[in-house]
Image (cartoon, rainbow, N blue to C red):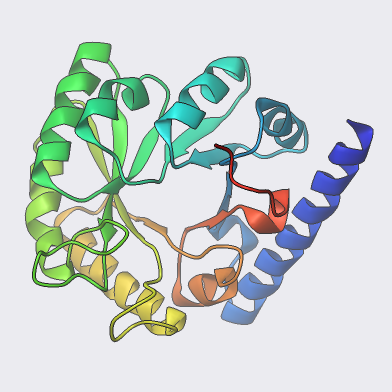
Length: 239
């Protein structure tokens, strides 16, 4: 465990240096960017170590992994973010532990989240996942709504009990006109955030950037970066 703690501490320090350098280069204060560590496929023991090292935000993308891990770490001062594509039949479970759902991308999901949040007497922060590779279906390859659908979805979330419209999220697309153009993707997301905040000033969270492209996200103005591999290392998929 000591070896693992040392490994995580070293990785976390390097990521912190990267974020600090990116903030300095962009003329931003370090405290303007929140690190979310994506702990998917890693055990609760790692989450516990990260908490001891000062991490306060962790993310998961599969409920079957997240629910038992969140339960095992319920004594820790952590905010849990759900970042994966969310099926409506998993919403009740996710609402039980997630403080923020970053992957809201359709009206039916909003309705179900609202119903379960009210039932659980919780307030869930919601980020609209924007897909810059959305085709005719209006959805992206890895979930998300087309930019044109953001305004309508935002109004629905804002009017739904139990939900709080927190901002926007994106995953840099692998296909389409923005493939390989992370900086352009993140800058476009910031433009959409500016538009959103005109109608919803409190929806100021912008989640963008991962291990490989956090610098571009910080440069564009992201408030939150989601880092997994650079902190936890590379591990084979479970199952």
